Image (cartoon, rainbow, N blue to C red; front, side, top):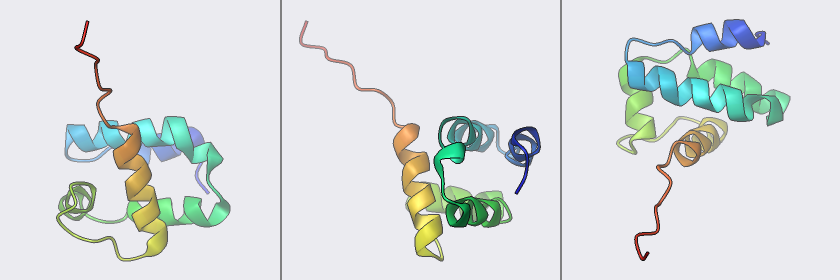
Length: 87
């Protein structure tokens, strides 16, 4: 497995928004993953930006259950926080 800094480096993509999504995931969740999930994340980093973006946006299905689970987490932690406007 990659060290934290090299993993963050690998999260750098051609699309800045993708960088932010993946780096947020690594900083918040990577250490909590199982070894299998960490390996799946390494596989996720090997796909093209367009394919990865399609998975995150729900336009295509990830190839495995492990990667599908990681995509769900990436989506969840990057959801905008709702603001209560009732005040």
